[in-house]
Image 1 (spheres, one colour):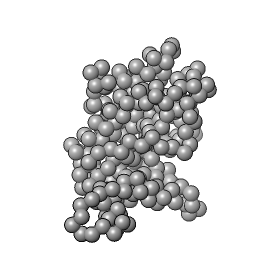
Image 2 (image 1 turned 180 degrees about the horizontal axis):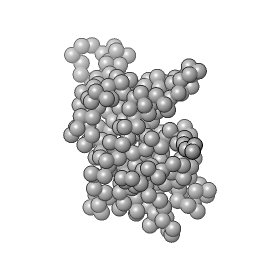
Image 3 (image 1 turned 90 degrees about the vertical axis):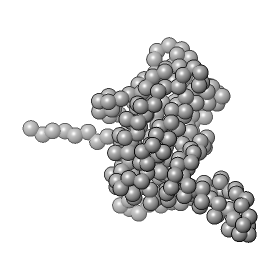
Image 4 (image 1 turned 180 degrees about the vertical axis):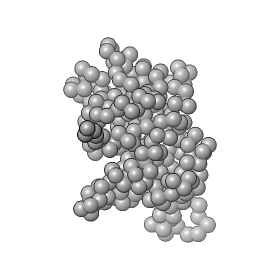
Length: 245
């Protein structure tokens, strides 16, 4: 007997949050459920096999061309019945995204301050590629996407920022502006981010013929296993409460 295998979209392996599904009814109930529910968990992940279905609900996944260790993107599509109108304004999307971002940052904090995941041997290549060393300082929240369908979806990049990135940023700023030793002025964060983006864009725009970014990200850099770990960490963070929203 021949067993047929299903080739999953490689982005599925890098998902670490996926909302269960939009409920039928008003958009208000849909968005309240994002804050109040955990998302899928446990063996429910084994049943995620179709990217076109998965991306109809809010999700977070690791970028295959990461700016820093565990650089992720949160995507919130419009609920059913509203995804073709493009009429949901940015202020509403922002409000709906805040509770997911809150929990994502708590997940980063647990992973990097509590567990020091970025220092583990199995993720050494990912740490080196993203120039990640030292302590986790904060998460850069970037409302920046060149491919967003305005009004029909909302994209947020979540970029963990470590001591090594802070040091690179400061060094670049002081060199570029000829700041003398002893002058402790700092700046240039957006310039540093732009330079990092230029570097990772080269992987996307002009890869060698045999260069498969998804396969390298998922397997060689360990993002598939890292996503599994983040799924479990996400479940350990309680949903946002009314007092925090």
